[in-house]
Length: 122
Image 1: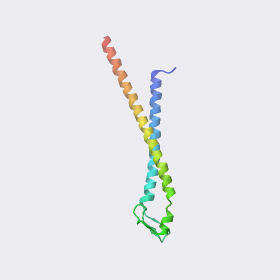
Image 2: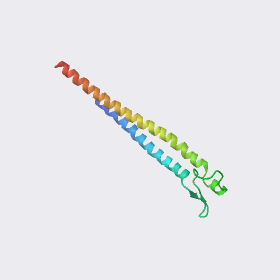
Image 3: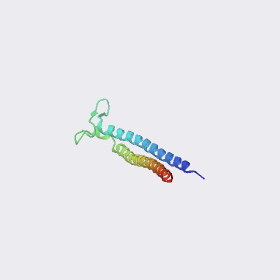
Image 4: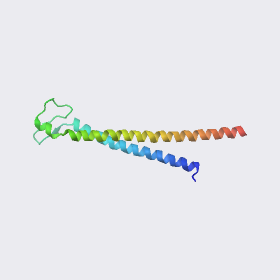
């Protein structure tokens, strides 16, 4: 049978673990978002000869060489990976932080209740 201190410690460790996993997911998501931004905002070259403008800043009808070099499925795949990773990371981090805050709050309440009981009995 576990004591209250062991249960509190296990709860605190689970909350900290959730927070760490959330932070890791957010770091991975940040890398994916930066990669996607790089593909969209940085000019690129087809060969050493053909220079293409960045996808966000090019004219509406670019040359056919520039159209074929950056494929849409690569950027869509990055977006498809970055978005759920961000949502999961935020969810895990917030759940861990709220759990830790609740555990700390419960410890404070128990401390003050015990103090009030001791004052009342004296």
